[in-house]
Amino acid sequence: MVDNDARAKLSVNNLSFDAPMRSGSTGPDIIDIRKLYAETGCFTYDPGFTSTASCQSKITFIDGDIGKLLYRGYPIDQLAEQSNYLEVCYLLLYGELPSAAQLADFTGRVTRHTMLHEQMTNFYRGFRRDAHPMAIMCGVVGAMSAFYHDSTDINDPIQREIASIRLIAKMPTMAAWAFKYSQGQPFIYPRNDLGYAANFLRMCFAVPAEEYEPHPVLAHAMDVIFTLHADHEQNASTSTVRLAGSSGANPFACIASGVACLWGPAHGGANEACLNMLRQIGSVDKIPEYIAKAKDKDDPFRLMGFGHRVYKNYDPRAKVMQQVAGQVLDVLGVENNPTLQVAKELERIALSDEYFIEKKLYPNVDFYSGIILDAMGFPTSMFTAIFALARTVGWIAQWKEMIEDPEQKIGRPRQLYIGASERSYIPVDERS
Image 1: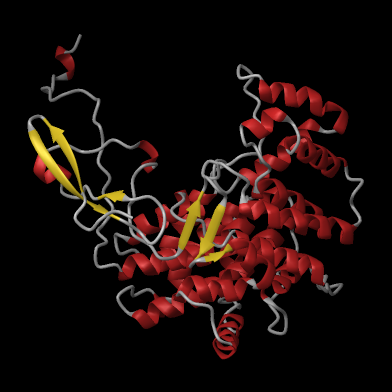
Image 2 (image 1 turned 30 degrees about the vertical axis):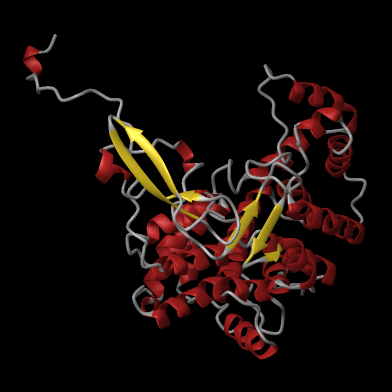
């Protein structure tokens, strides 16, 4: 932690810039450059904002060097093993773990808001039959602002609270209906006597002709998946939600922007890409061939589901997911599935091969979550939609924090312009 009087000095074109230093409760120190342009006429250049803090936050902390992920100070493995998703939602939204009474009240409020406005069924039917579930999710989440006018005023804390509960409650229904629509099956309505994860599974897999009772192990696995993906600091989709929110956009539009960003294969689509890779390998006997391709830097093939941009050590979420994967596969009895056998052998190699160990290419959360969701019966097109469902609470918590931050301004990144300098217009008949 830096001294309160510590300064960072920068000399630019014979001008001296004296920047204050700031420290968080944990993590690296910060150089405050907000007055850099005003005092020097210069910007910083940081593609991807990998060295730039765009906000201050109390919600989530990551230490990628040692593989640590904290929600409001609580280690992710403790929450995944001892808590549940709705309790984690409360923690992320309000900053502290709830009392028994607070949790019961919060759970009740979420449960009573899981129904969608009945006219939204018509909105679903406007999509093509083969529409990707994430395409549907982008549209339906954004359309909530057309159905729930009483919770779009971002300056009213009560309306912000109502919108938050509605989004958390209705996202499983919206995701399940996107799945049902892609399968050509009738929509299944939520049931208030089921837990959050179990209700989602039932809405996905029940049909009118036959009731579906979610297996407790599968419901627990889904709850853990939700918990592990609930928030992840200032990633691309979260930053998108904050940027959209900084303009004063309504909460439903902001969360829809996060859904759209999450759809990218480099972000939320990673577990789908991982499973597609496992299917591409096909069988255990072909693994050495693909391992060789992965080690060849001139070969475009890349192993998906290994390593992480932030974590330079083992992804702490992957450790929990590995245990859950074993439980799910045992219950479903699908150990002989060729894709799962390829995954297990790749995992064994990654944890013992010197190349993987040296480069710290450990299996990450996407590696295991894709295996679990596939075993449960979800098509790969639903993986990112489930990710969006889980991440909704993190987006909301970050959005609310941004709205309430007196230092927050509308997002306006600068650029390094490399185009043509000013030039005069030439009439078309005078151009060569």
